[in-house]
Amino acid sequence: MGYQHGRPATDAAVGVAVDVVPCALVERRLHAALTRVESGPERGRHAFPGGRVRRWESLDGAARRWLDISLGCAGAYIEQLYTFGEPTRDPGGRIVSVAYIALLPEAVERAQIVWFPYDRLPKLAYDHASVARIARERLRARLGYTNIAYNLLPSSFTLSELQQVYETILGRSLDRRNFRKRVLGLGLLVPAGDIRRGAHRPAQLYAFAELRPMVIEMLSTPLRS
Image (cartoon, rainbow, N blue to C red; front, side):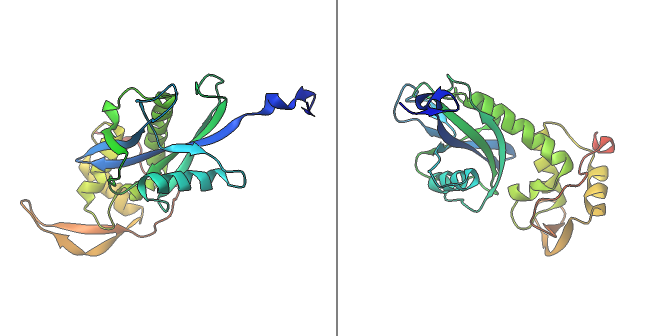
């Protein structure tokens, strides 16, 4: 038996996996994509997409690969959340998992994938209830000081639709006038060159000036209603 740092090599036999929390807005509610576990002690329960990391693969690369396998969204925005390493987290073996959140502009329909409202998730396999909680906390926090909301919207949108994204995820209302003043004052948006017409009065369509993550002060006390 070989040894590493004074311990038997078998003590270091720990698998590494990634779990991805795909999120999208559906009818003004935050949803997450789940898949059903097909084998092992957790068979029949739902879990977030993911699996083992290949030997020569980066963690980010593995997360994108599993997201592509599950939803065909390899180019979506992903962000690393947390590392889960409790010895008993996976009854099938000693697995350390690095969790990611993925933000999508729409809920992509795929075989073996079911979208659930985030506040109505079923009982999850492994420790994925903790993964879900941390993902939601991170998303709410990031909305306050970054522009990542662009990943949850189509290429053009109204200011009301942008505000709905924030209100839906934060779970509270925002003052309409202060929100619009803040967003337009930050220079994040540009007119999309079109107007949306419908039952209500026409609304200007906007687009994000840059589609890259930026640290900004999106939310502050004056935005609260």
